[in-house]
Length: 373
Image (cartoon, rainbow, N blue to C red):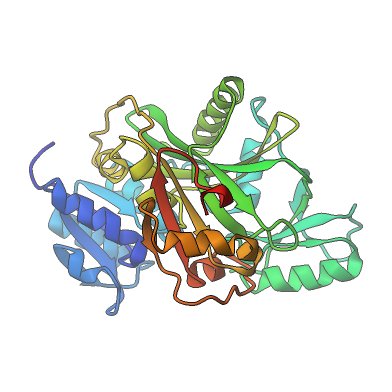
């Protein structure tokens, strides 16, 4: 890698921390944009206080400093990053046919033609439309399960739509067929220079209806070889059809009766410490280095190997039956992080609320369960 190329980091919140820290390790100079009180501003080599949606200013500063790559730090900044990269002729996700990892409706429309993955029926909400219940109601561009709920009848639907609109930038709401049963997974990916590599499969535990809050994650997911192979094919097809060809991607899938269903994807690493902790400690992939290399056009494929089991449990009401495990985590050598500060298990209706409730992260030679208490 060329010594000290300059990487523009769009956004300087918590999600920028692992990017900025890794860049420093590998002699990449960082130019970060954010607000005056941005959490990660002190970790950047150069910090510019700016509105991250002020294209002209960002573009001007990137030219001024001669940046060689641009990287998003969060869900919010993925689209502006792709547009800036295209305008500056730098590596980035494809925007020619519309950015493919922001609008859940656009994602579903683009993925609809693939034969390697299924989808629920979907449409944009319309007043007075007759729906076949139950349906899942989503804000079009939200993340972290915010604005997601289920409706079993017309009264539920009105409440669900109102709830989703609280998290919708333009008031648009997506209505989806409810996929009952099965198991949920996420897939951490990295793409660059024509490669579409799968870094890790994560098995998710969720609360189910009404808000489908994620209560735990485990790596690696327990998958048969056949299912792993078919999921890999589906993931790569989805990345290609959505134009996600540069950097990290966090894809969510559901498997019902051995059939694979696409849920959604983000053009960034997984939240809930899936990317910055679980993945980097369960594999030998230097995930954030790979993401930076993609943005600089320097990524090369490397075989990725499993080296440990990792996971995270959230201290929410849905996990109250695991109280003995949370107590054990206070002293267990497999617990590598613990933010739980009290014994109260509070109800959580989104992933943001579960994280705020506290959690512990494990790393072990096996999947940690209640049996380990």
